[in-house]
Length: 54
Image (cartoon, rainbow, N blue to C red; front, side, top):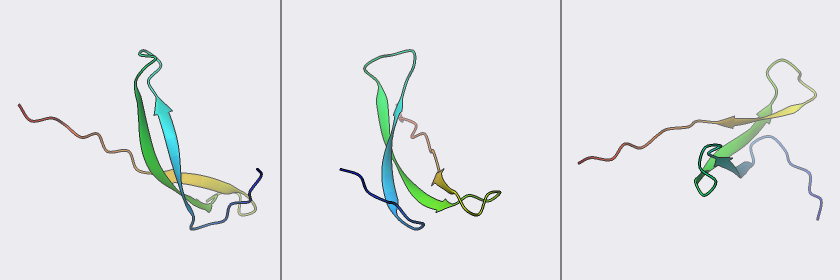
């Protein structure tokens, strides 16, 4: 299934840990206009690591 995406849509990306095969994070990202190439799209995501309290 092929689908076109547009600015303002929310997608989910998977970030894998290259050092541990079984560790990955799912993160939300927004599709935006590329800031330097107006005819292209880019992903905007904000990674925030959550620390555990002991």
